[in-house]
Length: 277
Image 1 (tube, helix red, strand yellow):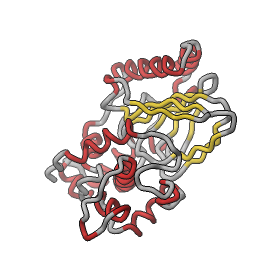
Image 2 (tube, one colour; image 1 turned 120 degrees about the vertical axis):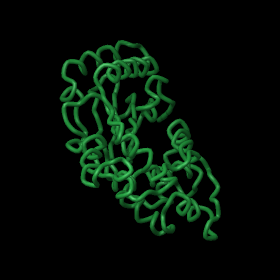
Image 3 (cartoon, rainbow, N blue to C red; image 1 turned 90 degrees about the vertical axis):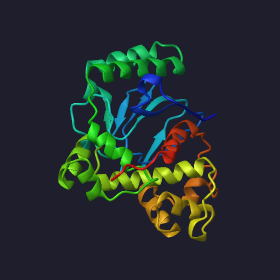
Image 4 (tube, rainbow, N blue to C red; image 1 turned 45 degrees about the vertical axis):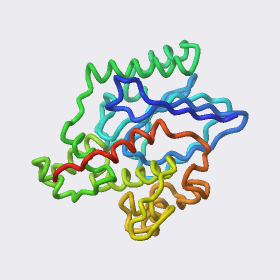
């Protein structure tokens, strides 16, 4: 039987990793639809070759073989493990981790395979990432502040954001491409859609602005002009309409997986005051 269990990352990774997970397929292959999140991911099939999934700008469909166990890590936008390439070279790419980490990836494969259980393999992977971020990874603080400002709850003008960060618009774009993989505008659109998914998955009730309720209300709450605007963006980012993606309801998604470990921390940012820009 197919299963997918998300959980919060190790405390030492809380600032750079959004969520970790373990996925198991059953007797049949499983069709997985990967969606843009603004961050990169590591997919580590136990007994197979791990891959880094670069920042996505649209849906990526993967057929996972039967009886496969995958340990995964989803990074926050603007944070990524040590890589020999800038992230805009990895957009919409799935790259063998050995091409990026060399013999380090091979040693990690062996250590995780011998750990004895997926839960322990996930601990091994996270421990490795903790050491990586302590030793070698440097996160651009201005990009980090830009990512916080681009969260969907308090829409900002990109020119004003650049001025707030003491950058030109082109400098902000260049630094965002380097550290995130996509432009500030694309990231803003991606995070807005992630905000809608977070509200829908949490079963949030719309505030009722403009007399809207249900899915239309959530669309307005997260910053879309109306439900039609949401539908266009959903098709662009996922290849499906909102109701197709969510299975017809706005309090669950069609995949049947529990995503609270990913979306609850995302929703916490909704209550933070906006940056003064």
